[in-house]
Picture 1 (cartoon, one colour):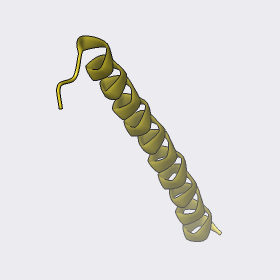
Picture 2 (cartoon, helix red, strand yellow; picture 1 turned 180 degrees about the vertical axis):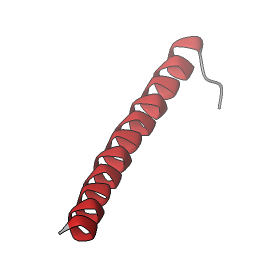
Picture 3 (spheres, helix red, strand yellow; picture 1 turned 45 degrees about the vertical axis):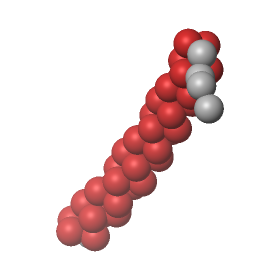
Picture 4 (tube, rainbow, N blue to C red; picture 1 turned 30 degrees about the vertical axis):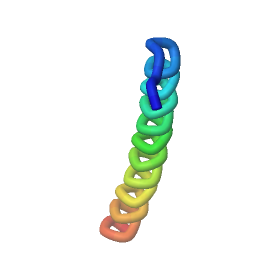
Length: 43
C-alpha cells in the first residue's frame, strides 16, 4: 500500500491532534488531582 504526500500529512495531523487532546486531558486531570491534594493537606 503506497501513501501519497497528502495522506501522510493527514495521518500525521490526526496523530498530532490525538496527542494534543491526550496531553490536554492528562494536564487537566493532573491539575485537578493536585488541587484535591492541596485541599486535603491544608484542610
